[in-house]
Length: 362
Image 1 (tube, one colour):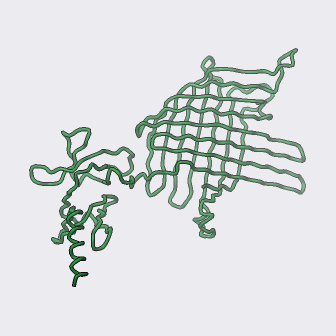
Image 2 (tube, rainbow, N blue to C red):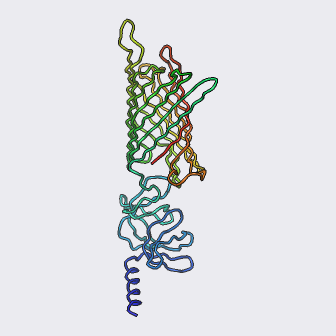
Image 3 (tube, rainbow, N blue to C red):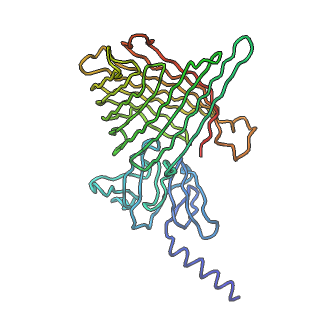
Protein backbone atom coordinates (compact mmCIF):
# COMPACT_ATOMS: atom_id res chain seq x y z
CA UNK A 1 0.00 0.00 0.00
CA UNK A 2 2.87 2.38 0.88
CA UNK A 3 4.49 1.71 -2.51
CA UNK A 4 1.25 2.54 -4.34
CA UNK A 5 0.89 5.80 -2.40
CA UNK A 6 4.52 6.72 -3.07
CA UNK A 7 4.05 6.09 -6.79
CA UNK A 8 0.87 8.20 -6.84
CA UNK A 9 2.64 11.06 -5.07
CA UNK A 10 5.55 10.86 -7.51
CA UNK A 11 3.20 11.04 -10.50
CA UNK A 12 1.37 14.00 -9.01
CA UNK A 13 4.64 15.83 -8.31
CA UNK A 14 5.82 15.14 -11.85
CA UNK A 15 2.57 16.49 -13.25
CA UNK A 16 2.95 19.56 -11.09
CA UNK A 17 6.46 20.21 -12.37
CA UNK A 18 5.65 19.50 -16.01
CA UNK A 19 2.50 21.60 -16.36
CA UNK A 20 2.24 21.98 -20.15
CA UNK A 21 -1.07 20.59 -21.43
CA UNK A 22 -2.23 19.34 -24.80
CA UNK A 23 -5.97 19.02 -25.43
CA UNK A 24 -6.88 16.78 -28.35
CA UNK A 25 -9.84 17.15 -30.67
CA UNK A 26 -11.77 14.46 -28.76
CA UNK A 27 -11.25 16.22 -25.43
CA UNK A 28 -8.37 14.16 -24.03
CA UNK A 29 -5.86 16.13 -21.95
CA UNK A 30 -2.18 15.11 -21.94
CA UNK A 31 -0.02 16.72 -19.26
CA UNK A 32 3.75 16.96 -19.39
CA UNK A 33 6.48 19.14 -20.88
CA UNK A 34 6.21 20.09 -24.54
CA UNK A 35 9.69 19.46 -25.94
CA UNK A 36 9.10 20.97 -29.34
CA UNK A 37 7.27 21.11 -32.66
CA UNK A 38 8.72 19.73 -35.88
CA UNK A 39 7.43 18.30 -39.12
CA UNK A 40 3.75 18.49 -38.25
CA UNK A 41 4.19 16.74 -34.91
CA UNK A 42 4.29 17.95 -31.30
CA UNK A 43 6.58 16.09 -28.89
CA UNK A 44 5.59 16.04 -25.23
CA UNK A 45 7.45 14.38 -22.34
CA UNK A 46 4.92 12.63 -20.09
CA UNK A 47 5.25 11.00 -16.68
CA UNK A 48 3.41 7.86 -17.78
CA UNK A 49 4.77 7.12 -21.28
CA UNK A 50 7.92 9.19 -21.73
CA UNK A 51 8.23 11.28 -24.90
CA UNK A 52 5.38 10.85 -27.37
CA UNK A 53 4.62 12.48 -30.73
CA UNK A 54 1.15 13.77 -31.58
CA UNK A 55 0.02 14.95 -35.00
CA UNK A 56 -0.85 18.65 -34.96
CA UNK A 57 -4.07 17.87 -36.84
CA UNK A 58 -5.26 15.93 -33.77
CA UNK A 59 -4.56 18.78 -31.33
CA UNK A 60 -7.15 21.36 -30.36
CA UNK A 61 -5.07 23.51 -28.00
CA UNK A 62 -1.62 23.64 -26.40
CA UNK A 63 -1.26 25.33 -23.01
CA UNK A 64 2.28 26.24 -21.98
CA UNK A 65 3.49 26.77 -18.44
CA UNK A 66 6.90 27.88 -19.63
CA UNK A 67 8.58 31.08 -18.50
CA UNK A 68 11.84 30.35 -20.31
CA UNK A 69 12.57 31.56 -23.83
CA UNK A 70 12.46 29.26 -26.83
CA UNK A 71 13.51 29.34 -30.47
CA UNK A 72 10.99 29.29 -33.29
CA UNK A 73 11.21 28.92 -37.05
CA UNK A 74 8.35 29.51 -39.48
CA UNK A 75 10.19 27.89 -42.40
CA UNK A 76 12.10 24.68 -41.65
CA UNK A 77 14.35 25.14 -44.71
CA UNK A 78 15.71 28.56 -43.62
CA UNK A 79 18.45 28.62 -40.99
CA UNK A 80 17.32 31.93 -39.46
CA UNK A 81 15.57 31.47 -36.10
CA UNK A 82 13.75 33.75 -33.64
CA UNK A 83 13.99 33.74 -29.85
CA UNK A 84 10.51 33.99 -28.31
CA UNK A 85 8.70 33.86 -25.00
CA UNK A 86 5.26 32.36 -24.36
CA UNK A 87 2.30 34.65 -23.68
CA UNK A 88 -1.45 34.84 -24.28
CA UNK A 89 -3.60 37.21 -26.28
CA UNK A 90 -6.84 38.88 -25.16
CA UNK A 91 -8.82 35.76 -26.06
CA UNK A 92 -6.57 33.57 -23.93
CA UNK A 93 -4.82 31.88 -26.89
CA UNK A 94 -1.14 31.01 -26.63
CA UNK A 95 1.07 33.36 -28.66
CA UNK A 96 4.84 33.62 -29.06
CA UNK A 97 6.42 37.04 -28.52
CA UNK A 98 9.82 37.70 -30.21
CA UNK A 99 12.35 38.82 -27.61
CA UNK A 100 13.82 41.36 -30.06
CA UNK A 101 10.44 42.91 -30.91
CA UNK A 102 7.78 42.58 -28.26
CA UNK A 103 5.22 44.41 -30.42
CA UNK A 104 4.94 41.38 -32.68
CA UNK A 105 3.31 38.03 -31.97
CA UNK A 106 3.32 34.62 -33.64
CA UNK A 107 0.44 32.19 -33.43
CA UNK A 108 1.22 28.51 -32.93
CA UNK A 109 -0.41 27.83 -36.30
CA UNK A 110 2.36 29.87 -37.97
CA UNK A 111 5.13 27.79 -36.38
CA UNK A 112 7.03 25.17 -38.34
CA UNK A 113 9.56 24.31 -35.63
CA UNK A 114 9.73 25.17 -31.93
CA UNK A 115 12.32 24.07 -29.36
CA UNK A 116 13.85 25.05 -26.00
CA UNK A 117 16.53 27.74 -26.15
CA UNK A 118 19.03 25.40 -24.49
CA UNK A 119 18.09 22.46 -26.74
CA UNK A 120 19.51 21.22 -30.05
CA UNK A 121 18.25 22.79 -33.26
CA UNK A 122 16.05 20.04 -34.81
CA UNK A 123 16.22 21.42 -38.36
CA UNK A 124 19.95 22.20 -38.45
CA UNK A 125 21.65 19.96 -35.87
CA UNK A 126 25.25 20.83 -35.02
CA UNK A 127 27.79 19.36 -37.38
CA UNK A 128 31.10 17.80 -36.47
CA UNK A 129 33.67 20.47 -35.69
CA UNK A 130 36.12 18.79 -38.06
CA UNK A 131 35.21 16.53 -40.99
CA UNK A 132 37.76 14.75 -43.18
CA UNK A 133 37.69 12.98 -46.52
CA UNK A 134 40.31 11.25 -48.62
CA UNK A 135 40.02 9.78 -52.10
CA UNK A 136 42.34 7.94 -54.41
CA UNK A 137 42.16 6.75 -58.00
CA UNK A 138 44.55 4.52 -59.94
CA UNK A 139 44.07 3.40 -63.54
CA UNK A 140 46.36 1.56 -65.91
CA UNK A 141 46.51 -0.04 -69.35
CA UNK A 142 49.04 -2.41 -70.84
CA UNK A 143 48.99 -3.94 -74.29
CA UNK A 144 49.38 -2.08 -77.57
CA UNK A 145 50.22 0.89 -75.34
CA UNK A 146 51.17 1.28 -71.71
CA UNK A 147 49.44 3.99 -69.67
CA UNK A 148 49.25 4.67 -65.96
CA UNK A 149 47.54 7.49 -64.04
CA UNK A 150 47.19 8.27 -60.34
CA UNK A 151 45.09 10.88 -58.56
CA UNK A 152 44.49 11.66 -54.90
CA UNK A 153 42.54 14.23 -52.92
CA UNK A 154 42.43 15.11 -49.23
CA UNK A 155 40.46 17.77 -47.36
CA UNK A 156 39.71 18.84 -43.79
CA UNK A 157 36.71 21.06 -43.05
CA UNK A 158 36.12 22.89 -39.76
CA UNK A 159 32.55 24.15 -39.35
CA UNK A 160 30.94 26.33 -36.68
CA UNK A 161 27.59 28.12 -36.66
CA UNK A 162 28.88 31.05 -38.72
CA UNK A 163 32.26 30.01 -40.18
CA UNK A 164 33.70 27.34 -42.45
CA UNK A 165 37.41 26.66 -42.94
CA UNK A 166 38.42 24.20 -45.65
CA UNK A 167 41.97 22.92 -46.18
CA UNK A 168 42.59 20.76 -49.24
CA UNK A 169 45.28 19.18 -51.39
CA UNK A 170 45.23 17.15 -54.59
CA UNK A 171 47.64 15.38 -56.92
CA UNK A 172 47.30 14.12 -60.49
CA UNK A 173 50.08 12.26 -62.32
CA UNK A 174 50.04 10.28 -65.56
CA UNK A 175 52.49 8.36 -67.77
CA UNK A 176 52.12 7.07 -71.32
CA UNK A 177 54.66 4.69 -72.81
CA UNK A 178 56.93 5.46 -69.86
CA UNK A 179 56.85 9.21 -70.54
CA UNK A 180 55.32 11.55 -67.99
CA UNK A 181 52.31 13.30 -69.55
CA UNK A 182 50.75 14.99 -66.52
CA UNK A 183 51.99 16.29 -63.20
CA UNK A 184 49.83 18.61 -61.10
CA UNK A 185 49.90 19.43 -57.37
CA UNK A 186 47.34 21.75 -55.76
CA UNK A 187 46.98 22.92 -52.15
CA UNK A 188 44.78 25.61 -50.70
CA UNK A 189 42.49 26.98 -48.04
CA UNK A 190 39.06 28.57 -48.14
CA UNK A 191 37.65 30.53 -45.18
CA UNK A 192 34.08 31.85 -45.11
CA UNK A 193 32.13 33.76 -42.49
CA UNK A 194 28.33 33.85 -42.74
CA UNK A 195 26.65 36.27 -40.31
CA UNK A 196 23.26 35.60 -41.96
CA UNK A 197 21.47 33.25 -44.35
CA UNK A 198 22.28 35.15 -47.54
CA UNK A 199 25.52 37.13 -47.33
CA UNK A 200 29.04 36.09 -46.40
CA UNK A 201 32.62 37.20 -46.81
CA UNK A 202 35.51 34.93 -47.74
CA UNK A 203 39.28 34.61 -47.99
CA UNK A 204 40.90 31.95 -50.16
CA UNK A 205 44.40 31.01 -51.25
CA UNK A 206 45.43 28.33 -53.72
CA UNK A 207 48.87 27.21 -54.85
CA UNK A 208 49.57 25.02 -57.87
CA UNK A 209 52.56 23.32 -59.44
CA UNK A 210 52.03 22.07 -63.00
CA UNK A 211 55.02 21.46 -65.24
CA UNK A 212 52.84 20.89 -68.30
CA UNK A 213 51.11 24.26 -67.80
CA UNK A 214 54.50 25.95 -67.31
CA UNK A 215 53.70 26.63 -63.64
CA UNK A 216 56.66 26.24 -61.35
CA UNK A 217 54.43 27.98 -58.81
CA UNK A 218 51.07 29.67 -59.32
CA UNK A 219 49.36 31.34 -56.36
CA UNK A 220 45.91 32.96 -56.29
CA UNK A 221 44.95 34.94 -53.17
CA UNK A 222 41.36 36.19 -53.24
CA UNK A 223 38.89 37.89 -50.89
CA UNK A 224 35.42 39.35 -51.22
CA UNK A 225 31.72 38.81 -50.62
CA UNK A 226 29.48 35.82 -51.19
CA UNK A 227 25.74 35.56 -51.78
CA UNK A 228 23.60 32.43 -51.32
CA UNK A 229 20.72 32.36 -53.80
CA UNK A 230 19.49 29.34 -51.87
CA UNK A 231 20.83 27.03 -49.19
CA UNK A 232 18.44 24.41 -47.82
CA UNK A 233 18.76 21.12 -45.96
CA UNK A 234 15.94 18.56 -46.14
CA UNK A 235 16.30 15.23 -44.33
CA UNK A 236 20.07 15.68 -44.37
CA UNK A 237 20.21 16.45 -48.11
CA UNK A 238 21.80 19.76 -49.05
CA UNK A 239 20.87 22.02 -51.95
CA UNK A 240 22.75 25.29 -52.46
CA UNK A 241 23.75 27.89 -55.03
CA UNK A 242 26.38 30.45 -54.03
CA UNK A 243 27.97 33.35 -55.92
CA UNK A 244 31.21 35.14 -55.05
CA UNK A 245 32.72 38.41 -56.20
CA UNK A 246 35.90 40.04 -54.99
CA UNK A 247 39.51 40.85 -55.83
CA UNK A 248 42.51 38.56 -56.18
CA UNK A 249 46.27 38.76 -56.48
CA UNK A 250 47.76 36.24 -58.90
CA UNK A 251 51.43 35.32 -58.95
CA UNK A 252 52.98 32.88 -61.42
CA UNK A 253 56.58 31.69 -61.56
CA UNK A 254 57.03 30.00 -64.94
CA UNK A 255 59.53 27.36 -66.01
CA UNK A 256 60.29 29.45 -69.10
CA UNK A 257 63.39 31.66 -68.86
CA UNK A 258 63.71 35.33 -69.63
CA UNK A 259 65.55 36.06 -72.91
CA UNK A 260 69.33 36.19 -72.42
CA UNK A 261 68.90 35.35 -68.72
CA UNK A 262 68.80 32.34 -66.42
CA UNK A 263 65.92 33.88 -64.44
CA UNK A 264 62.44 32.44 -64.92
CA UNK A 265 59.52 34.51 -66.17
CA UNK A 266 57.20 35.74 -63.41
CA UNK A 267 53.79 37.42 -63.51
CA UNK A 268 52.17 39.39 -60.70
CA UNK A 269 48.73 40.91 -61.30
CA UNK A 270 45.56 42.15 -59.62
CA UNK A 271 42.41 40.46 -60.89
CA UNK A 272 38.71 40.14 -60.27
CA UNK A 273 37.72 37.04 -58.31
CA UNK A 274 34.38 35.67 -59.50
CA UNK A 275 32.95 32.33 -58.43
CA UNK A 276 29.96 30.01 -58.50
CA UNK A 277 29.22 26.91 -56.42
CA UNK A 278 26.28 24.57 -57.02
CA UNK A 279 25.62 21.49 -54.89
CA UNK A 280 22.64 19.13 -54.87
CA UNK A 281 22.04 15.86 -53.02
CA UNK A 282 19.61 13.48 -54.69
CA UNK A 283 17.40 11.07 -52.72
CA UNK A 284 19.11 8.04 -54.28
CA UNK A 285 22.51 8.82 -52.68
CA UNK A 286 23.97 10.69 -55.66
CA UNK A 287 25.34 14.21 -55.18
CA UNK A 288 26.28 16.76 -57.83
CA UNK A 289 28.91 19.44 -57.13
CA UNK A 290 30.04 22.11 -59.63
CA UNK A 291 32.48 24.91 -58.81
CA UNK A 292 33.65 27.62 -61.22
CA UNK A 293 36.09 30.48 -60.62
CA UNK A 294 37.11 33.19 -63.07
CA UNK A 295 39.97 35.63 -62.49
CA UNK A 296 40.22 38.22 -65.31
CA UNK A 297 43.08 40.70 -64.92
CA UNK A 298 42.11 44.24 -63.92
CA UNK A 299 44.43 45.88 -66.47
CA UNK A 300 43.43 43.45 -69.26
CA UNK A 301 39.98 41.95 -68.72
CA UNK A 302 40.31 39.82 -71.84
CA UNK A 303 43.10 37.85 -70.17
CA UNK A 304 42.18 35.52 -67.33
CA UNK A 305 41.82 31.99 -66.03
CA UNK A 306 38.63 29.96 -65.73
CA UNK A 307 38.80 26.92 -63.45
CA UNK A 308 35.85 24.53 -63.57
CA UNK A 309 35.34 21.27 -61.69
CA UNK A 310 32.23 19.09 -61.71
CA UNK A 311 32.06 16.01 -59.53
CA UNK A 312 29.41 13.30 -59.13
CA UNK A 313 29.48 11.16 -55.99
CA UNK A 314 27.57 8.00 -55.14
CA UNK A 315 27.35 6.59 -51.60
CA UNK A 316 28.20 2.89 -51.79
CA UNK A 317 25.87 2.07 -48.89
CA UNK A 318 22.95 2.68 -51.27
CA UNK A 319 23.90 -0.60 -52.97
CA UNK A 320 23.40 -2.45 -49.69
CA UNK A 321 26.65 -4.33 -50.25
CA UNK A 322 28.87 -2.66 -47.65
CA UNK A 323 29.00 -2.81 -43.87
CA UNK A 324 28.20 0.08 -41.55
CA UNK A 325 31.93 0.74 -41.15
CA UNK A 326 32.11 1.48 -44.86
CA UNK A 327 28.90 3.52 -45.01
CA UNK A 328 30.86 6.71 -45.79
CA UNK A 329 32.64 5.27 -48.83
CA UNK A 330 31.71 6.97 -52.11
CA UNK A 331 32.49 6.46 -55.76
CA UNK A 332 33.50 9.77 -57.39
CA UNK A 333 33.66 10.70 -61.07
CA UNK A 334 34.61 14.17 -62.18
CA UNK A 335 36.36 16.51 -64.57
CA UNK A 336 38.53 19.57 -63.91
CA UNK A 337 39.22 22.18 -66.60
CA UNK A 338 41.65 25.07 -66.42
CA UNK A 339 41.07 27.40 -69.34
CA UNK A 340 43.45 30.24 -70.23
CA UNK A 341 41.82 32.95 -72.34
CA UNK A 342 45.29 33.98 -73.59
CA UNK A 343 47.68 31.08 -72.92
CA UNK A 344 51.43 31.42 -72.76
CA UNK A 345 53.30 30.50 -75.98
CA UNK A 346 53.64 26.74 -76.32
CA UNK A 347 50.72 25.90 -74.01
CA UNK A 348 47.12 24.99 -74.77
CA UNK A 349 43.99 26.99 -73.93
CA UNK A 350 42.56 24.15 -71.85
CA UNK A 351 44.14 21.69 -69.42
CA UNK A 352 41.59 18.96 -68.60
CA UNK A 353 41.80 16.22 -66.00
CA UNK A 354 39.30 13.35 -65.75
CA UNK A 355 39.21 11.17 -62.66
CA UNK A 356 37.42 8.21 -61.11
CA UNK A 357 38.14 7.76 -57.38
CA UNK A 358 37.03 6.01 -54.22
CA UNK A 359 36.47 8.39 -51.30
CA UNK A 360 36.20 7.80 -47.54
CA UNK A 361 34.77 10.37 -45.10
CA UNK A 362 35.10 10.44 -41.36
